[in-house]
Amino acid sequence: MDCYLIDGGAKLSGTIQVNGSKNAALPILAVSLMTSGRCTFRNVPVIRDLQTQVKILNTLGIESTWHGHEITTRVVDTYNSTAPYELVKTMRAGVCVLGPLLGMRGQATVSLPGGCVIGERPIDLHLKGLAALGAEVTLDQGNIHVKAPRGGLKGATVYLGGKFGSSVLATDNVMCAAVFAKGTTVIECAACEPEVVDLADCLNAMGARIEGAGSPRITIHGVRRLKGVDWTVIPDRIETATFLMAGAITRSPITVAGGRPDHLLAVLDVLRQMGVEVKRSGNRMTVVPCERPKAAELATLPYPAFPTDVQSPILALMSIAQGTSIVTERIYPDRFMAAAEMKRLGANIAVSNGQAVIQGVERLSGAPVMASDLRCGAALVIAALAAQGQTRISRIYHVERGYERFEERLRKLGARIARVAEDAPQSAVAAAEA
Ligand code: EPU
Image (cartoon, rainbow, N blue to C red):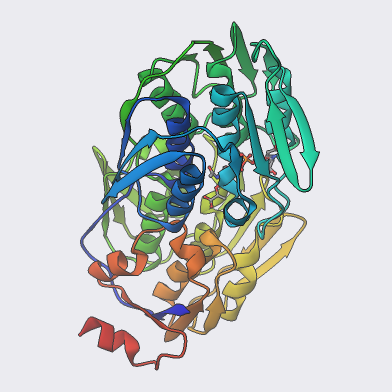
């Protein structure tokens, strides 16, 4: 297995281009199940999770071709409507084929995704929404079966709020299933994330009639069929934020190009509170670094508030800020795995009851650490960029689930990072640069 070796302390410079959004592309690819037409999806990041999603779609009768960041799909048979456990267990987002399959084929079986390292991740809201449209939901041998009634799904009003607020993929699933339901469906307490809007816009381009995406009330008027589509996925707001953190922590005026600042207002606001200005010019964001960032306080909440997926990366920045920062995690209260690893780099973070208190230290120092999940891995890379000495990050396959050629792109900015075998010598960073 490979790891990252990072020699901290290098200043970064230049421009980095943001890729398409992982979390928009995952459900959007699944709409290829909802048409017999040919679909082309552009700006799809070449990352592990998308590769897994394509494999799931292939098992469901979709033929696909990748050309760089472009994927073309077409349904070639509709015989199998079961998403296999071997694939869904590696990526929870596999569950987003449930709504498209139920809507189009009248039934679907997906293995129940278990918990994951960021905490319990139930799917009760997905099932509640599908049941409200008339689907029969059964659980058998770890699989969820959903089946439309004889006359097909029927539009309904469904409240999709849970104890942690709205749910992105539940909104996606119910919206997709409702596209083919008879009559009108109203989703109340719908997730407002830009990824939900991108999915709704893509479905509308295929002939769906969805109104209100981006607000807590989405109305879907049922249609009989959808046509193929040529769709360009929105830029990844989490990747954009991650690169901004890399600029901020290394105090480097890098430019992140191709992102959507309007999707990142909460992150930009917290950075401003910390003394890190981000100059915007169209879709280009340039970090105006400060000497040492100031502490800040934030809570993660559904969009448009601060995203949980940027919580670990900003923890890295807060760990070297002046003063005491407080981060309250209101989406996944157990998502603080990064904190324990960052302590190994010298960060002073105390976690209890879904809250992290970060006492900023003057500097971090390199150490061997382990990525426990995707965003934890990204946060460790950011922390390591600013740490004194060398950091070895193992289990980087987590990072590669969500960031395409992460080390290569950071190296182009001047980061001293190499992707090497687990037992490579310390000198491997210099060798990679040569
Ligand atoms: N929830 C329920 N019941 C449900 C579904 C969710 O109680 O049926 C709870 C969750 O436990 C959580 C909250 O609702 O506390 C929000 O979860 P949500 O359903 O919105 O998460 P998701 O749709 O499964 C997506 C992203 C995650 C991101 C969350 C929150 C994708 C593929 N995944 O997951 O992304 O953290 O929304 O914004 O879109 C990541 O990219 O690293 C990642 C984990």
